[in-house]
Amino acid sequence: MSEKNNSKIDDENNNIYHLDTRKALSKHFFEKRENKFIYASFEREMAFYESVCSGNLEIVKTFFTPLGGEGFGKLSDDFLQNLKYHLVISIAIITRFCINAGMTLEEAYSMSDIYIQQTDRCTSREQIDDIHYRMIVEFTKRMRQIKSKHTYSKAVMLVLDYISDHLHEKISVKDIADFVSYSVPYISRLFHSEMGIPLSTYVIRKKVETAENLIQFSDYSFLEISNYLNFSSQSYFIKQFKKYTGITPKKYYYKYHLYEKENKNIEK
Image (tube, rainbow, N blue to C red; front, side):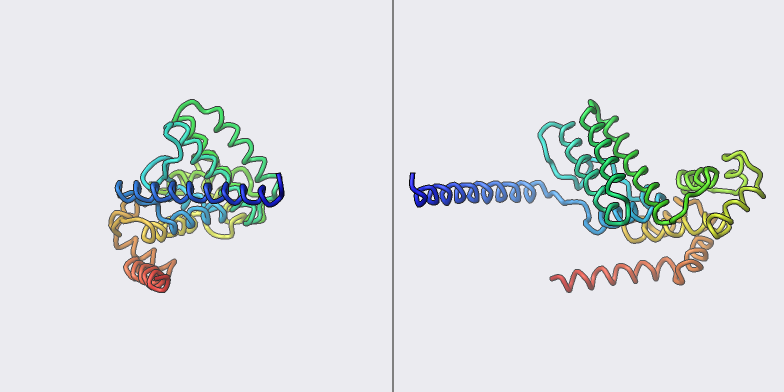
């Protein structure tokens, strides 16, 4: 067969391929509109990945969403396979975000391989949810050490994890000291020495950082946020929020959402 005929066949095959793709896209768009499907917020998704890269476990847990919920696309008719696809995508994206933020290729890709292999062996949603959560926490913790450029002592790492797990509760230095089995004076000195700030200050700062993200990316009222983070009162929450951000929660809300609105108008 001549080169000219081969070229003609290739062109015909490409045209058929592009036609099939256009048909598939048209059908996909139609079904999404008919079902009133809305994808998860892109801004919230990017904020989540940035939180992982910054090592901010408290914010990551605030943003964390189980796979397969509202805003997740359908990648397979098989329920379990659909979750596996989403988990592999999540692992791949987080791996590359962390590499870009400073994690070594060897460490990032090794973790990715391990979690994808575990995903492949899953036989239930519970197993997939467990891997999803563990993967996110592990990447975040490793990025926290990378960003700090410092390896914390085991005691301080336990303190950081305790605060992250109990951020929505009332946290006292005594509770933390009891958890790590050290005296209040000792753990307070050790934490201040390694982190550069008092333990009680760190707790409040993390609560305020979480409140900032809830104001940006959730529909919770200021009172609900105050209660969720276990501030003693809404007035105390406002006082602490202003102390660390320079403005009240209300002004922060309008400042952020006005900026977001202006950006969307520019895009249009």
